[in-house]
Length: 115
Length: 112
Image (cartoon, rainbow over the protein chains, first blue to last red):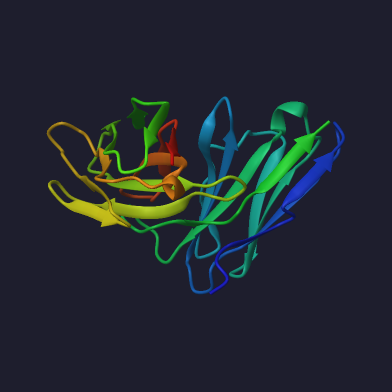
């Protein structure tokens, strides 16, 4: 089992450019989560899919961030018109089933730097 | 909203010392509680969890007991090793969604 795979591991973009981050969840897992990690804000929830359907995007900045899960083997997080404050580590996690007590397994993260 | 408070931002110990990291939570429902550990350049790794009052979770010599009355889930280890140096996160999971709310993390440094 390869675990959760995230690509790229590092990405540098210029202000105003678009960034797309990829996540491949653990095979057979039905829930996929995205989080963001910064020194100042810590680990923050962004959005969540269950069986590929978007369930909760309450943590997503409304205007420039979007997430999709076109099939069960991958999810993408897209940031349009990136800003320096978007610089962070973006983490993807998956769990076997949805629900409060199931364990989420995290990928290594994508470190995004916006210059 | 739900929240998790870790009292210690940094803990420095010597090998074989006893470790306690305090974790208290505030939640409207009955959450599951987790401890994760994060090494440099990696994502958080699941350590263990507890889902109900008085349940003890444990792994690799670490343990914590769910205390609903005190709203606590303190991490302990009897004898730490240099390899335990990492950042430790306490987290709670919303019952309906599984969405995790994390504490600010505790940096553990163990000197040989």
